[in-house]
Image (tube, helix red, strand yellow):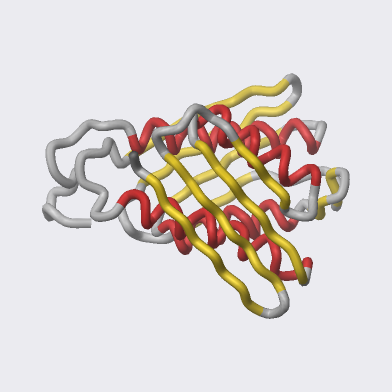
Length: 187
């Protein structure tokens, strides 16, 4: 089984994540935000990834650390990234909203987000914290992530982003290449 674990604490905040890429989509999340817990559950379910995540402390850093812990767990789980498809793409519609996610697990951290939320909060979460989570995943997961989204209902937008991310990860980590899928032979 492909499993990873990461614990990070900085600036009065902490995050811990355990991940199983060969899971069934089960998630247990306690991040200090019921909405973020819901997003992690959605990502896990669509990606068939088992995730156990917790985060707390200083809310200014909590969600970037959560993303970093998810990314570090993913990076640890993938090792040298041999034998996987490497690239993943998914588009998820939710009523008025659509999110498209494309990613490359090629070892280079880069985040592109195109779209905007309509308000500053979704339930108990600031919308800017969604980008903080995605940036942490990108940086510590050593992946390129492109996210394009639009919609009227911010809850639907965010949920479609996390569901598409889970499905794109699932597509990228599926067995595919013999060795590392790179013209250079290494990632």
